[in-house]
Image (cartoon, rainbow, N blue to C red; front, side, top):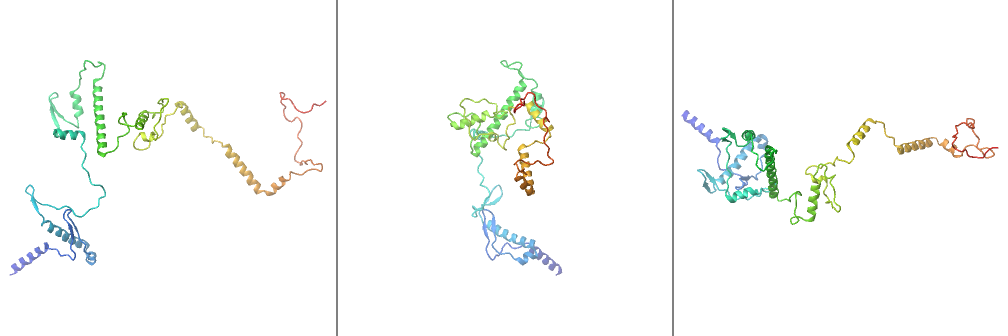
Length: 350
């Protein structure tokens, strides 16, 4: 009997681990099977939440997920590659989006052509056997350029070509042109996909562009030099496009003004050296005069008695002449040197 009792108790404990699939709620939960979303409007039990928060939230989540799964099992099913899947209905709840819905990527010119002709992209092997070199050569990527050099170590000069022309450099230039052409085509694909205006570069025919656009293109072409068009010659009745400056010619951050000037470089360097070596402060005459006037005015305001004495014009004698002070002396005649070339004025003495 003890053994039976132990087995029953163990079975009961195992059954307690697995809860029932039937979940009871005071208010029914709102579910949206299209989005696999379950919304629980019931209030939380604050006492149980404060006592054991993690266990309470875990049990609550388990019950809500069980409600969602119960409704999923009631949907229609289908078999896909030995797997049974449920057919979800369209979503009913509208979720807010921070960004717009993704749109289908627009095909490039080559992708459209390949789709029309039925050309499928095949994966290339990483290495191919080269019969000339007699070894496995990488198809692309690492050590591909070195393999090309080993293979084409000598080039034949065409009949009509210049015998002194470097054929290796010509091959590199052609490769650079192809890379540039592919880059231009890639930029055109991006512009076409984003549906934006074509940049104001290149030649625009009179049928495809207006007079204003042609004038803008000419201004940009003229300013596309090292000096930003500073030394470009102008025609007699040439017009310059409005609103097209140095800042708009180069995309990105604002460009500074050109450092190219008409002053020779040696003159600029001499001026720079003189400004560094000559450390004497510059004398501002107007500022010095204003400071002197201010000091004199402050001195007069500080000594009002001296100001009143000067206002009378000094002491005068009975005859009306000024009385010299004891300190002042009569200047001696011939004290200074006389200029012999200058004619003396006044009446001659006899």
